Length: 138
Image (tube, rainbow, N blue to C red; front, side, top):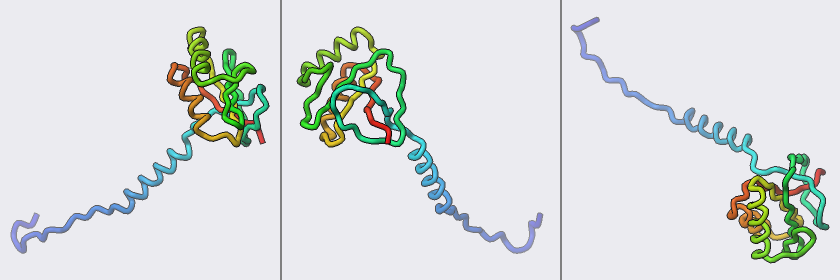
């Protein structure tokens, strides 16, 4: 220790932000690539031109209900066209029987997106949490 002599010069401390920003972007990309958002289901039913996907996984569906959304936006359950109110009533009955029922939405690939979201929203509002969108394997 040198207590005599010239006083110590203050060295400026710097923090490099470039490596920190690089790591944040790498983590963001990692989480975006590893997150999944949908379950692809293959299910028979109404005449609907389903969108195509490279993989079509079929979860076990001991208890399920299929809602078909046709090209013109009509919703069909069990072979009959239903209004949003009638769909809500049918889903409430299904929920009372089994709250774990899976709701599969078979939407034509040309139908407006908000129609599919509306059908899924009605099911989710009632409390049915197991929702899927049907696709066919390419």
